[in-house]
Length: 220
Image (cartoon, rainbow, N blue to C red; front, side, top):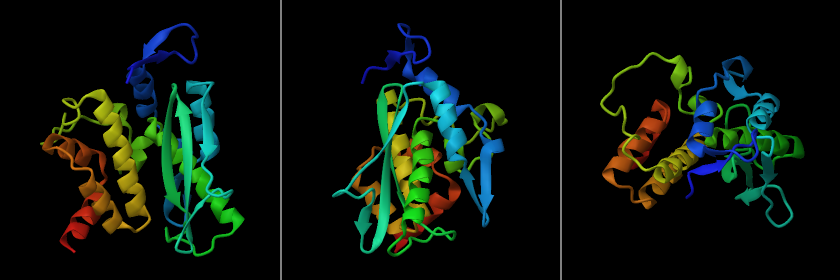
């Protein structure tokens, strides 16, 4: 994959995609996180405004299934949203859930719409915006003190295309565990047949609650 793209705010200028992503990864979104029933949500309106500031050509697309904006899964629903930024599409999925993060049987239009907008903000995280929230961190990298850990720098030895793949996989595993599907998350992880260094790097992208859920699922 070409690591360069046209600067969305300076047409005609080539920039490294990783530099554009790094700016979003470093952005502190804490002031725009909404609290509801003990759960935290990044404001979709603010997040999309920031996406357009970073790339005026940014778009998002709600994936359709037989004319419906969600996939039916045993009476519950999963929505999929693709966000394209810096010339690359990234797709995220999210179950239609209630305030307890439980999948809603036969969800109504309001619940589906809410899930779509939350899914869009998660897809933006795949491009870097607010990703630290889904990794269980309080601040983005630039706002945190440096802490030396055994896995620090694990991503540095991974090629960029593999890093992007691991970030996408991490978001999938987080979404599955958020939807209380740790067994499916573990099955997904196992099916990827990751190399040892990839597993270590992936582990650093997962919040502790997801790592714990995966370990328990493995033992079942």
